[in-house]
Length: 179
Image (cartoon, rainbow, N blue to C red; front, side, top):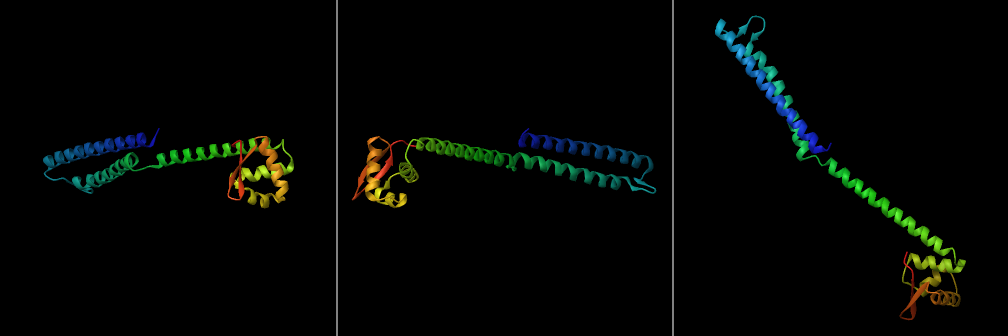
């Protein structure tokens, strides 16, 4: 049962309670009027005026009915808790899906790296973390000589594992397969 349905039920209960309070008030006034017609006074010894006696009960009943009615009205038109919870659940689900996707990609890339030498793995990890990395930057990141790096990149390029693109006096290095 959602918030609006509960609010509608509470609103209806408030209306029904108001109806009962008004019904009992009219019955009490009718009874007080009968006593007034028979005795000429609505004052009962030891209890006071019958009209005043029932007015306090009437006010309490009306206050309770108005509070219930207001709660129902609030639940129907103003309370957005249900919508916020649904949105939060969607956000959490989306974040979990993204985390699963990232884990799957990470696992897939780790499995892909298993077939390469340690130096090739270092290079591929660096290129994976920054696709399009400049070869001069890559040299420092993997801590290799320029010659060793060039030879390994040439080998990887020949096997269609990386692609090199000329960029000024150096090359940019990209993974051929996207993860």
